[in-house]
Length: 165
Image (cartoon, rainbow, N blue to C red; front, side, top):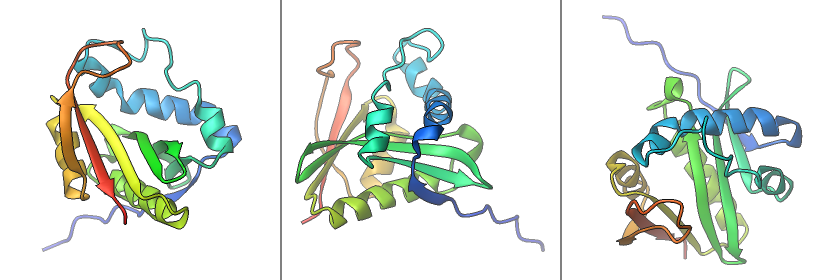
């Protein structure tokens, strides 16, 4: 009986400024399914990630690379010195279920602990059950469900938190 081929482990590192366009492409492609759930498309909506260069400069953006190619991206917002909001974790569909999202989340948590961040928070669509159950498997707990404050849509979000202290 032969074993299925092992997928290479991703290399997780900070995104580099010259990779901004590449990272945007990965984000837009990775979030097509999510945007479709709220009736939007990355092709027809204004890019909400125009702050990517700032996140890269402040070392709040990571890339997951496999065979030298960016296949996943993660960004956080520093809400305060002790609290980060995980803004996005996106992995290309061809690399889904290979542990890349988990590796990105582990890197975020490691960085947060190194910077004395005590709380990680995030929100995701309530209808995207696979996402919030994934975050629960990483130790996040559901705080509440509500529409987003940004007002672009009124789809319920699941607001979650993980305390690191």
